[in-house]
Image (tube, rainbow, N blue to C red; front, side, top):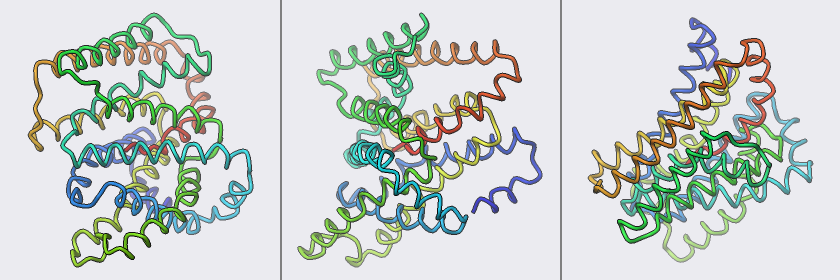
Length: 328
C-alpha cells in the first residue's frame, strides 16, 4: 500500500504530497461521526470489538505486505514496549468506547469539544508530567479552555464528561505512547493484537446468547462492521506517509479539521442543539486555540529552515506515537 500511495502522488511536489496525504487522513477522521451514526443500532461495546479485531487483521496484512514482519516481531519481544502498549491499549479503548457512545446518543457536539481542547490538555500534561516549560500564551490558552468548560458546566448544569474523557484519555495516550518509541502503525497493530483475544471471547459470548448484531441478517451492518478495520487503519497510514513529506508543525495545525467537521455534522446534519451556553463556551475554547496556534506559528517562523528540517526527522517518531490515535 505504501507503494501505491507513492504512485498516486508521484506528480506532486513534496509539500503537495504531504498536504494531500495529511488532508486525506484528517478528512476521513472528520467523517467518523457519519460512519458510526450509520451503525448506531449496534451497541458501542460490540462496535469496539469489531474495530479492534478487524484492525488487527488489516494491520497485520499491511505489515506483511510491506515486508515489516521482522521489525514487528522484534516489537512483540520488547517487554518494555509491550508494558507501555498495554496501558495505551486501555486508554485508546476507553476513548473509542466513549466516542462511539457519544455518536449513538446524540452527543457529537460534546465530543467535538473534547477534541478541540485536546491539544491544550496535551500541553498541560506535558507541563505536569514531563516538566515542559509553558509560555505565557500557552498558559493563557489553557486558562481560556478551562473557563470555557466551567461556563458550560454552570450554564448547562452539567459537567461535559464526554469532552473531558475524550480529551484526557487521548492526551494521556499520547503522553504514555511516547515512552514506547514504536512507530504508529506497528504500535496500533500491537495494541489491537493485545486486545483481540478478549474481543473474540466477548463476540463468542454475544453469539452464544443470540445478542450479536454481526451476521444477524442485516448485510449492510455486517459490511460496515468489517470495514471498521479499514476505517481505523487507513487514515493512520496516510498520516504516517504525510509525515515523511511535510513539517510536523504544519501537519499538526491541520488537526483542527477533525473537531470542526464533527462540530458541523453535529449542528447541521444531526440537529443537535447549539445554545448560547455552547456559543460562549466554545468561544472561550476557540480563543484559547487561536492563542495556542499563534504561538506555534511564531515558533515556526523564528526557527531557521535548516533547523526546522532537522527537527522533522527527530520528532517524527514522537509524532507517530501520538498519531495512532487515531483519533476516535
